[in-house]
Length: 201
Length: 92
Ligand SMILES: [Zn+2]
Image (cartoon, rainbow over all chains, first blue to last red; front, side, top):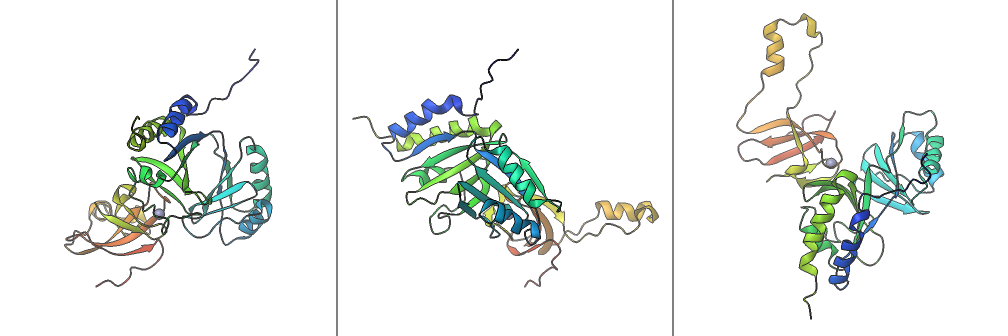
């Protein structure tokens, strides 16, 4: 009989190396996994009644402007397509969030899917975080075109990712990556971060 | 490397897209009524212009939407992009 089931995040084994890269940069870049975030994929007609019902249930609207994110009440709603969003919440809230969304869309033509295990999240922050990510993406990350509230599905070092700019004053991003690509991407980030390590004194 | 403007996401690297061939090729109304020759023409025969060409692209590493683009096959210039269901815009 199984007495204790331990959860392992895709980048659990990288924690020490990500922390070491953060220390070595002297604060220029901050790398860390944000494990076990709740992620629910929502597909519905943005102009239909379900969109309004979801706004009332979550307290935030599903953004209709492409490549934008709305945050509030501990949740973030990311635009993935004209009829598709990713609702991200704190760890351990998947069943509650899924039930809330399911209740909101009711019998309308919609899909609500818990995809929490599909991707893990990385925090890429610090004053050089844009430069770090720019090594591997053609997306213009300048605050003018990718400031707070922006998000994008794109390629980073040839891996498919969801990138979101945090609202905070200091530059920083969330990087959602498929679990099977997470190790590869973490290795790539660690390698790219070598450039920002302070020379040994 | 092409910079392709997705009608939803804006300009993105060519590597994010998949190519879907010539646009506006309607599926036959009654496929069973076609002769082998007509069926083969529908399946395999496409325009091959030197110049503007309406073609389908999918933003597969981004919003995953199919859309249409008019691309100059000689210069690779993307003259217009438009969403599925919209008519082909007039391009110079
Ligand atoms: Zn797109």
